[in-house]
Amino acid sequence: MKLKDRVVIVTGGANGIGRALCRRFAAEGAGAVVVADLDASHADEVANEVNQIIPGGGLAIRTDVSSEAGIAELIEQTIARFGRVDLFCSNAGIGGSPGGPELPDELWHRMWEVNLMAHVYAARHVVPHMLARGEGYLLQTASAAGLLTQIGSATYSVTKHAAVALAEWLAITYGDRGIKVSCLCPQGVRTKMLLGEDGKRDTFLNPGAIEPEDVAEAVVKGLDEEQFLILPHPEVAEYLRRKANNPDRWLRGMRRLLDNVKAV
Image 1: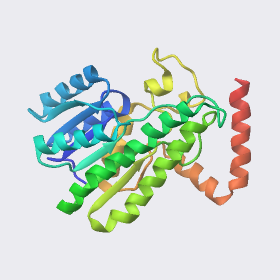
Image 2: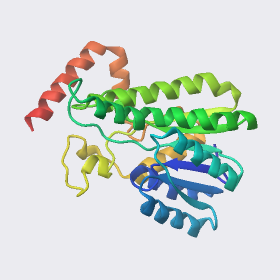
Image 3: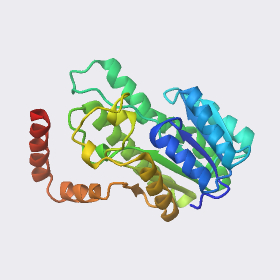
Image 4: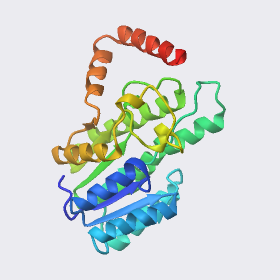
């Protein structure tokens, strides 16, 4: 997909990867960029930046992606304002708490709502519009954790795996009906999710972490080539091959990594 003149929605667009995507899409000549986020003030700031590049093309809409009604309203407002949705970037996500099955149901449900069901709601409400037009594109932000795993957080790993599985299903089901699907799976990215609010959190992912703008660059390239998996960290592809080639050896290696992380 070429981004010029396209109408794009980006959830989680006020900060981090989402903000970098909005800025980059505007720079690529998108026709409109809708910045959807619970953080209304920062969403307004990003939309104003977009408007400086695309006069009248930036729009901020406060959206709770865990609400189906909220996502449906987001799509309807965008179509009412700009006539269509060419690219829906289901990007919003939250980090998981350390722990596994013992974590309370409230945490599991919240992660499920934001990291998976938000993608389901987006597809449920935007795909019919795209099918009617015979074209459209879904970009779903998952994580390298959805291809591999997340050390320490079962909720994050499980919900991101589910997001990847949904993207695969959508690509298979609608790929011959004009709808393209890409699944974005970055590893460490220098955002608040990785570094914390003060930017000082230290994790084993920090040394290889990249900037949100690097992710946006990979996304633009991946959309242009209509790749299913967009991997801003090239090494993730090699890790995935190792996992597929010898799962038992891969699991042993991950246990060693877990021990090293615990020892720090």
